[in-house]
Amino acid sequence: MEKNIAVIWGDCSSPEIVKQTIRVLDKVAEKYGHTFHYTDAAMGGEAIDKYGDPLPQHELDKCLAADSVLLGAVGGP
Image (cartoon, rainbow, N blue to C red; front, side):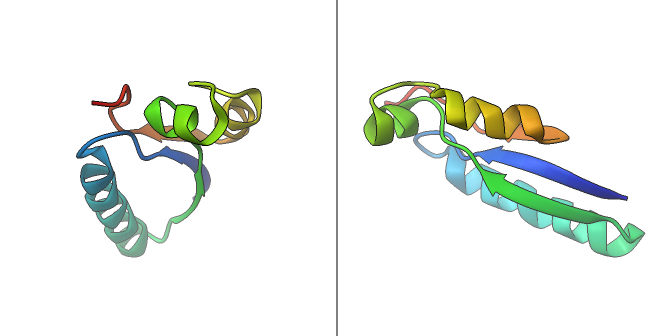
């Protein structure tokens, strides 16, 4: 199985949790012969800082093109 996953790292401590989630997914992929391709997408505080918009269309398009989205908590402090 090969899947594309959009990754929204989230704000505050969420990137640490998402990083560990990706480690788990990679172990699952290794054990069962899957391949996961990750694409970063910005949303929430990160997107506001980068683009002045909490969910820019080009970031939403990345999510819509993916097979799934790994979403960390968003909103900023």
